[in-house]
Length: 367
Image 1 (tube, rainbow, N blue to C red):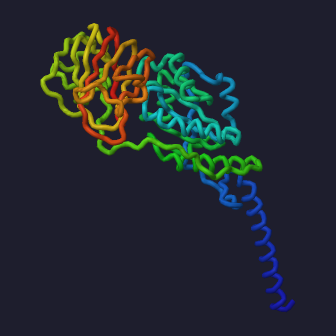
Image 2 (spheres, rainbow, N blue to C red; image 1 turned 90 degrees about the vertical axis):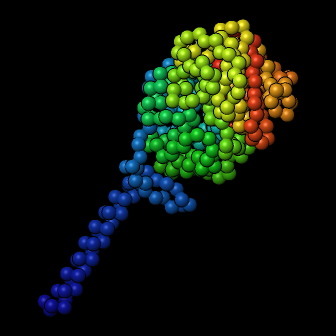
Image 3 (cartoon, helix red, strand yellow; image 1 turned 180 degrees about the horizontal axis):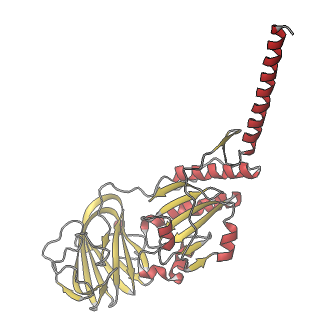
């Protein structure tokens, strides 16, 4: 056989062998496109080796809007948004209109929202209190009460609120702390729903529009959250009264001569507790010099509060949404009350005159 013919035959065999190997490789790749991201009509393989799996829900004390059995079944194969929140946290509350809107919009397309209610204060462990809160905010998705913070720890979390989004295979693909980034979060939901649909062979067209809700705009310079419980206030110089914190004691606090910015001052007999101050006398006063456009309080037990701003009864233009009439507020249910709202941030001296023995004050929060 001539050398030219022999060379041609060998070259042909090499080409045929190469084509066969490439065919096997591409066939194998086709079988591995289960984990996909859709970008137009292009399916792209996703390397998930760098993602953590969402932990199991552990240590749950109560289930609202669901049962353990229903939730275990419902979570399978869904894109899951885990919202770690607590109902007296103003930052958490401000995110709820978006979360409930996403539930309405995407639940039928494969999104499951689970509210993980991890309490900051003792009264937030009461399922009846949480039930009233979810009814108030129109929450119909499952809410689990993580009263011992076991699921909080399983997520290695340290913040309220926090949102994790897991894809339909359980990998955490998004993590956001605090308020804001609503459009970014919704785009992740849309992307993961598209991935799910492509993976499961579901024909689905996701509405690319985004939920539009006017969100709260924080002021850059505002007073920090002020805690009344001695345990919560550790390493924070927030109580301006010269008597200071005295754990588990009843302290008679005297009228201050002067007050400093970002500190609160008490008058009357108050019991120092881990998470709050409890008014032991029939009446008491809280004074505060703050800077913000919004002031909220977290309280428990019945009382009538009269609010004064810069020495005058609270003007109507500064009345918070929980001030029903004049400058008075009746508190009964344990939770958050908005007492001051204004268009712009400013410094004001506020005085709260309290009539109600047993009233508990937990914290001031500002916006």
